[in-house]
Image (cartoon, rainbow, N blue to C red; front, side, top):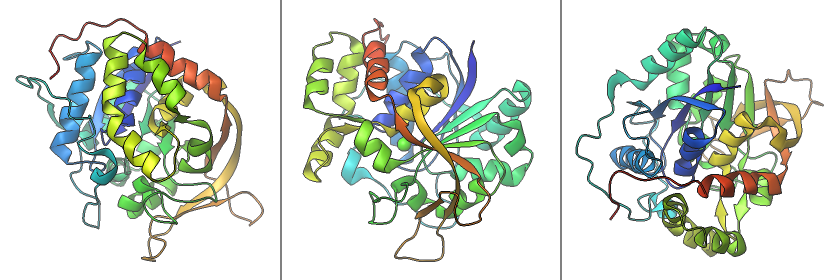
Length: 319
Ligand SMILES: [Ca+2]
């Protein structure tokens, strides 16, 4: 069965791998890539997404729409200290690589309408575009079949501050709007889930380096700067929450434990800005999201390694 989806992304590092999962998994029907301000400079993110389309030999096959270039209320905060340019210095000739003229928010609304209740959205950057879409048209929340969100930590540590995970920190107001809007939401949190079960250590990275395909070489290259950063902060490998978010939509059997939570986002405090309060059902709050607590990690690893083994012929040479 094919699953129509849009990936809303701040394309750098694992976002690229998440897009690959959307492009190359048999059951995925990737209708669009929508760009939002996040990890690295906006135009750099656009280039990273085109690099990704190229390595999958899908240039010109999946439309890209540009969305919000800044968060709703606050100045943009980058994660360039983590990701560098987000593509390990990879470059190519971008001549003719043009995003669509339609704004990402309008594209999201139109695609949801056209899919007649079947469109899923995987949001792996700050939630600015999704919040703007639901502000423009509140029924969008009901028209989207399933919204998978990468963000927050489940009563655990943050990554950009002690309290907050990057995506929610960058645009907490947007995240708050989205969790209040009535979507059917699944959350893939940073901690503990990603840190426990979606980190690729040196052994896995060596195995990937041994896969002699353009996709595997691309993976190694785009994940290189993040690996250095991760190891410097005590994370033993590269982190893959974004590709996991696409994977759990396409292969829900990867989720071995989840629970209903009420998720709300801190917008008032500077100290805990973007903190996701995930209430696990004993505080009298109505659940608004399913939070993934545990996955079949070997199966997820196999999902990505199998994908990276696929032969592709990138039409443009990387440099
Ligand atoms: Ca991301």
